Image (cartoon, rainbow, N blue to C red; front, top):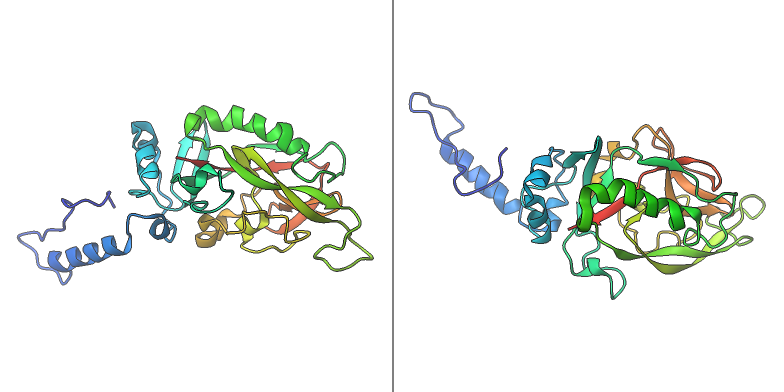
Length: 280
């Protein structure tokens, strides 16, 4: 269906009669407009999956987002650039949330997740979770490089920089949420604020719950499931393994398997990197 506007009306053909009259259809259209209000809550509740690359090309995408109306944009809509499908995973997810100086608290935004992994990488050179994800190779070099080489060439200055809460301390001998001290040990105990542009997803953002995280600390402030995965869970699996950012136990982090299973892997192993980011 085309973008809603006041000129978009159904009309009866002069030589036909139909039980679905133009009058009834127009009433239905009006009710649909009322339900689909110009705000994030309404647009987060509808999955569509339409190619909106034309809005990117004509420049109207940015006004549709920054206005907070998200006109004719819905969860699952996507942009194809540089042979990558960039999919809208939600709107205003961090509005009125996060650190006090967080730009996303007051700036309307859309969340973007690529359908496929952008590259493959390890978390650290060795099977270590010392310093958490905050001090990891993934966050000090890999993700910044991915942003420069993949994300910014497409979205440029519209990629929003913000403060995230990343695990900064891990107790290597602490009991984790597995509750089995004779087996897996190690749990996250603290987070630190880190300014960044792209981020690994949390278990909560993908699956809607903390399942294999070592403790309640792991997701930081990113505890809400992204609307894309809530409305269309088939997008959780992309047929590839990819990292999530929760610590599972000493030396291991949570990841998604190629079959969409919630699992974990050693920090020194190489898996896919499927980050998310915010645009305005």
